[in-house]
Image (cartoon, rainbow, N blue to C red; front, side, top):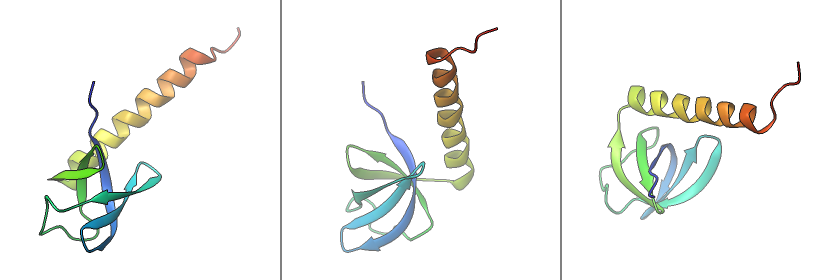
Length: 81
């Protein structure tokens, strides 16, 4: 299974950018998006920014990831009644 994650571009230097992926910062190759700017959202797959993403869509997706993580946490440690 493959997973592509939205992230916010924090800085760009040459062919790489520092991207915030839901609180985790990673160095990502941006050669596929030559017109990319800081503060834009991208979809990251296997270390490459493969597509720009509208901020609204990125925020919706990040919120869904957060909700799924919260649900997984609840399943792993159910509260005792």
